Length: 476
Image (cartoon, rainbow, N blue to C red; front, top):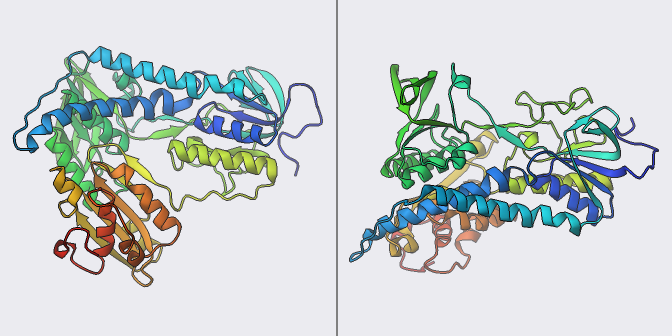
């Protein structure tokens, strides 16, 4: 079978590769291809830069950091002799500063990069596959291969009335020039937890509502601890419930739920929907072109980023898996290399780190205990609370824990999760440990710097064989 987009037409608008989507994945694919000498059409529609820089990672994390600054001042009293207080004095200026950062990074990391790569032609317009190539704004372009990297968008939960209320998303919530007085967050995943805590620390009255538990993919010990910490921030956390209906009322929005068999009603000025994201795969002509989609709308790809149609590849959030910006860029790079060089590279997410930027931060890599058992491993685990980690004692903040999962037969590390104020910057050690097959004994014998959060990983590794509470500082 010939490639979908092959052409003998060598007109000046013919390309080696057409990349649909101008976000992180799209740019990664385009740059990778150009560096190999390819002629690339990068097709974008709307704001260049995609989700991360415009409405995702960048705006949310700078707002989260601002809220952490408020909390840090207020928490100064944990040190004897200190007192502190901080408040939001001008919410609109905070939003304006966030927007300025987004604009600057979009310019520097996307728009200004285009002239640096002579082999990339940026085409603005709505793209659609037509079975032989790509239509951009209705005009056909010829390309030997295609990569679809159109990202994702917030999805709505199946709640009667949801489409009729003025709900916020993770995007529009961070565009409010007036700070909400009260906010109901639907969804206990990483977006819901991060934004709920951010708004609560900024002074908004927040409730966090979810059908399951918080961070359902995280270890249950971590989920339970995080629930308690968010409650300490004044958030009303309601879990393990079902949604019944939602409607607009005089003072905002009212959600009807059922919890433990009893009906309840919750009201807030605003409701923020953070119940997941859907792949941006509609209206691209994918199915008509022979590209198979999963039930959630994600483009089905194999481990070489190939779709069901020869010559068409996909990467990033549009595949419906591993929806992190760094995985999008990684997958897109592989897609470009395979499209141009014979499909030899395999997508590997076995040591993929993930982070939730709450405070304490949650970070993980590899298999959870449940996942390891489901894959047939006989497991052993070690859990160390942060009150055993000298760094946490020195900073007088012992919120959190570390859990390691290992193969009981071989001692090989299978997974790790960290709940700690500096957990995000510690997880990469476990990424390398798992990637290179380290055992619990080898990790426990590795030299770590004292008075660091990452030292907790050494203690957790030692915890498989001994009681770390009985060790002196730096012992072992």
